[in-house]
Length: 515
Image (cartoon, rainbow, N blue to C red; front, side):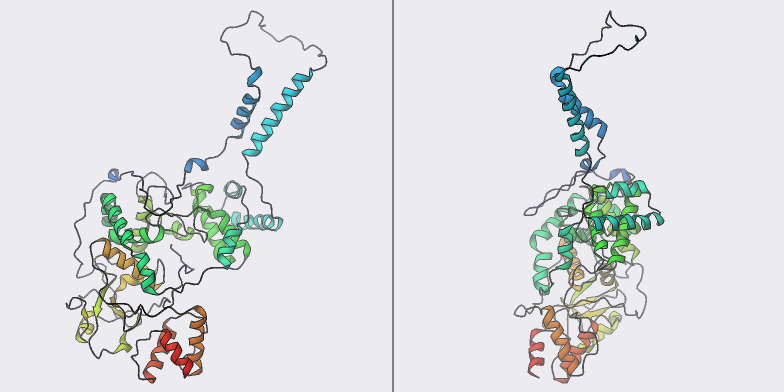
């Protein structure tokens, strides 16, 4: 899910750090990675309108746009009247009665209306009222929420949202208790990286990704040619965000954003997303009840937040709408490619490559803060996992996501571009590795320290307090293992004569407890 201000996935070793580059990366990588040939069609007319097929062992929530069309109240009422009067209706005839007059005569006084006529009239009236009520959603029940909506609509009109758009968007909107529960009780992410990758890059997800690459090859080739972002990266985002469109979310975005903005914990952020969602409705790209997604606001096949949609969504199939919600994924895939391109994607540059570190490697050089050309790393004896020298794709970092005992990676600028989609290292590695596997690349060859377990949030805070007491840590006790905590762990390891890989492991915490 694109998330410009909010991290959906909090991983123990994750915190984005934008360190200055030693040199700006090239627009096109100097050493492109060999890739299978793509079939590229030249014309927009070649976009194939194919329904996304069902994936095994997942539940598909099919969004039917027809269900969101405006209800014709008069038609419903007329239908109800016809149904109520069906038993007494006179068959229609095209003949003109001989009793017809050219002009209506003066009205004559009527006597008492028969009871059966009154009964039929009351029955028709009840049917009409029921039809009318059925066509309108229940008004907002909570008086405080209703008052908040009134105040918000004043702010929205000042931001250029029409009253008509507001009326359509908020018709029947209620507080979403389930959304509040999810927001207040978000499960702590404390899975080890290898456990996460086992799911994110599972054989099934790889197989389904290859199937989708084959199914949409022509369209993906055109998207790649236009935006200069490799098709397999776009497909990997699609696969990780929504299981290739099978799990797009079914929460009403207007109701969810209004609920979270009203709740007030992150009011400014969610009001901004709500205004953006209303702009999308006002532009005509979709209808209010068809705008569905996750409880936190991410929408469609590749989970765009409303603000990101406004800035980066594309109408690639040329139907006049930027439709990321429907069964056809073309606009969503093009929008993802556009997003990555606008954030600095370098065509032909890998996100990262698995490497082997030499004996005596200076682990103080590892980390996202060091961005050095390949010649330096090759001079240090670092090699690709197959023994080849590291190719020059611009400034690069050595990353040890699970310390010296796990997989070692050399990462390039495109790693940081994927971070703009989601800043968790676990997410970026999963996207990159899934894209490699979809195109036939190998699994990681190094082992993970699977005997370890991830630290809980409380344990990460405890580690920070121990490091602080020992004079190694001066940051906040926030339970986030980012660059400051990693540097503190590395300094502690050096002081203890350990390998200074900065890995905040359970064994380090236990050692700190003893010390």
